[in-house]
Image (cartoon, rainbow, N blue to C red; front, top):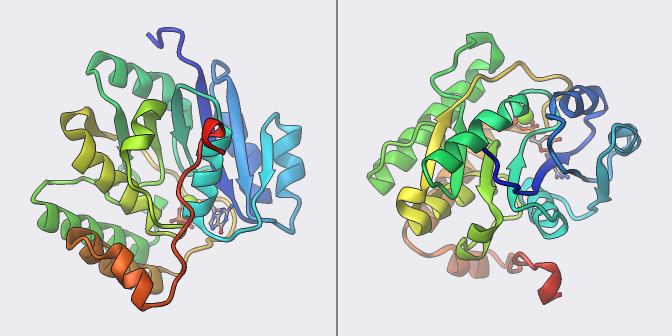
Length: 246
Ligand SMILES: Nc1nc2c(ncn2[C@@H]2O[C@H](COP(=O)(O)OP(=O)(O)OP(=O)(O)O)[C@@H](O)[C@H]2O)c(=O)[nH]1
Ligand SMILES: [Mg+2]
């Protein structure tokens, strides 16, 4: 089913000592490589991840998006899957999802948590934020997305150069899906998955990130991300660089 594809799992972590062991334990045995991109955690996350067999990168530059860019640059799989280091995403279903990609000739699958199968798995404020952002994206792009902020994606490496990924922070989540939708057309799809309650402390400030996400989507829709970065005097984020380009 996987047609001999090499498979990498990329996991960003910031003080996930409580969740990373469980997350590593969920990863199917056929996965070739697990890359944990850690944000200089102080709770031993890196040691636990390495003990569980991950290739660990200490990425001191802050940000959820930055961690993924570093992970994508440093993994070698033909198929890349992502998950949080908190045990929430069903990475154990990877074979099923990869099969869906192969069967339907897709390039990028975003694993949708909504509608939630277990209502207790997400804090009400996060559920509200995820729901509203998804509706906002669906309205702006005239496409019925199921979950614009999921952090689990499974995609072919070959589609990465087609995606314009600017954000180093939480906005990376909607950016990668919207870029995949805009640039891959019918080779982008969502796939409904179950979601679990988080192990350990959240790293997210829901209201701040919510406002930021809405502004970012408006900037993306109007093509003004680079201009706004300039106005806010935020340096341009470093783009993805693959080994052969470094
Ligand atoms: N390397 C790195 N990882 C980060 C950073 N910020 C968050 N993470 C990790 O990114 C993943 C997503 O963060 P979460 O706190 O789980 O955010 P969320 O999934 O939106 O919300 P909850 O799971 O409900 O807390 C987790 O594995 C975090 O540890 C960062 O600045 N650097
Ligand atoms: Mg999480």
